[in-house]
Structures are given as structure tokens and as C-alpha cells.
Amino acid sequence: MNLIIDAGLTEPPSEVAVFRDITLYSNVFLEHHILLECMSDMKDMYWYWLKHRGAFDYVEDFIERGQEHGITIRPERANISVKYLRAETLNKVISRLRAIS
Image (cartoon, rainbow, N blue to C red; front, side, top):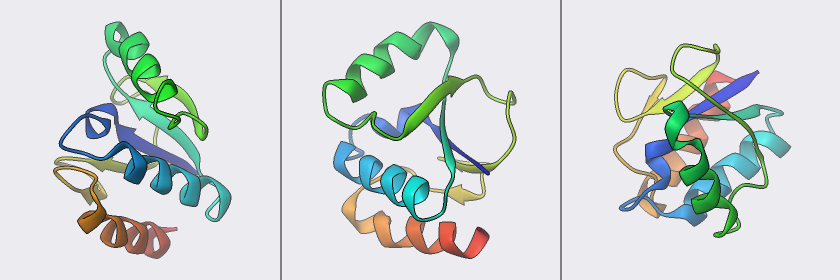
């Protein structure tokens, strides 16, 4: 199953380490394919941002909104709605992922 994450959730005030924890857990334990959702002209910027922070290990590809189906994590209109990915939202996201999967 795909896990589609809005790439904007990797930017501050989100914590990159929490993003990596979510992608690691989803890929290893839930066997999700991790896809980042962003505009096509922003792919390079997000790739650079995540790669140089050690958070791109479990991301498989970039997609545009509506291109793929799966579990979504976005600020709004998603299976899991969060404004940012921080330590205080980590347990909520992991619990919801486990419940949905």
C-alpha cells in the first residue's frame, strides 16, 4: 500500500527526524511504499533538503497530487491530518497508521 505524505510537512516547523521515524516505521513494519506529494518543479528542492538531512532513506518517489492512491498525511483533507510532524504528533500519526493498515 502507498503512504502519500505532503512534502510540505518536511519543512519547519516540522522536525525532519520525526518525518524519518514515520517513514522508517511505515516502510519496515507496515510495508508501505512511501511517496512524497509536491509540485513537479519542487522535487529537486525537497530531494536536496531530505537527502542532506539523512531523511530520504525510505522515500521511493515524488508524485503530484492525485497521481496515486493510498493513505495520505496532509495538513487537511487526508486520512491523517496534521499541521506539522513534530515529537508531539508522532504517536498520533503512528497509531493512526497502524489502525488504517
